Length: 629
Image (tube, rainbow, N blue to C red; front, side, top):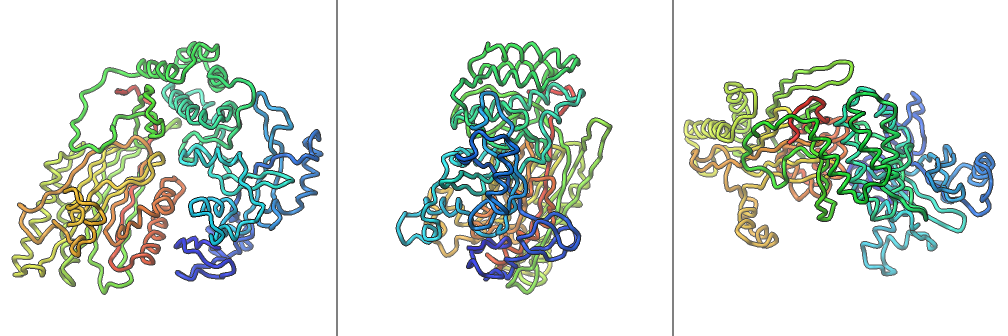
């Protein structure tokens, strides 16, 4: 089976194009020059840019290679494997080398590592077929089982990656197999990412940022304990940072027969601290020496000490701003907010965050079945940038609005545009240094409602003939965000740790019934389930009750505002990992990502206009002496 990269449709293995959307399944466009190139080649034939799909291979020794030197083994492997790593010829071996040892490793215990080119990147892997088969009844009629090699056996070492696949620090496992000759794991290739040791080598790096990474390691230590792979944190070469400066691992190292202790982690921390002589380093060094001497037996004890060190870097707290209708999670600035501690009450090191960058993009599309586009969106940002040779930060104020009009030609499109323009003028007139209050936001929405309502009265519109619009709105001031909505236009939040989550509840009959205790299936079986319970314009202000929320951005975050043409049929809930989560990366182009999402939604839905705004907020630890609590 070939999975279409555009719409995710499953096609026959020999299909040249996707049966659903027509996308080529044999070629792709070079991102540098636009030339169409085969998926099976590593470089663009026109400009030479690298375009291949690369995996990092871990290859366990064959019995006949035991005791050979690295150079001899490499030569034998290259001769034995020739051009491909697998019997099917899918994975072309590009390089091969010995894996750097970790304390306690014997050379015979170490896998070999290399980079491989996936010549069939759209085909399902053996691992994915195996996992699909496990999710279905294991019967002889299962299609996935019929396509698996009869001798396929999942390597035990692959289970550790699968168990931790929800942690961004752990590399994705793309394929795995074992036979009489070897065991192979294919992982996301992070070998070109910056080593953590190199990143932390800057003498000017503040203590707070060091504490941030040490606390991240302790969080990972807890997770790795569950799969007996704590040694993964004890190899400096294995610790990397991604383009957004998150700590990640190249691979997992199983714990050997010896004891793996927090003292060894403390020794690694001392290595990372290096020969610094700054006051911050001198404050931290005695604590790290205590850890390396084995004075702590539990992660909670070490994290408690990190908490105290963080307190010494902070001033007295200021009076916090009142938060109206906060989301369920605590909005305090924590170093880590993972939900995977399974109830462990560990102390949390607190770190203030500041905005590093903001990127935004908007898009609207008529859809495949409508004669006119009644959606309308608006974006307004003010950005002040501050930078020196060590760091940069920005000050941002932004207003983002998506409206989905109703009322037919010269009705819905008028209402949606009028709502956006009224709100833009309103917030320009009441501009202030911080986010506006809930009352101020509601007043702006009511003014937009009144403007549309007055137009309805002026044109003597009545009943279902009245024009109206939904609205989804976001206000951003640095790391503080306010959102509001009326109707069924939605707002989603996407983070690395929590994935995508819906922040709004539709103002529609089905959702109203659910809130009254009716089961979802029953509520949405009603013929009027998707009828709006409120919108802007059809009725006076007494019938409009906007929902408003405030929250703080404590990690890199993507906000998506969209009309229901994009979100219908649970499209974003089902495909958020494919279309939303990748947009968190600084390298992702938001406009291209939105366009790809709209094209997919037109294939899946297409019955309505589609509009969306994506806002990507990147944050970094605040390196100034600011309140931590």
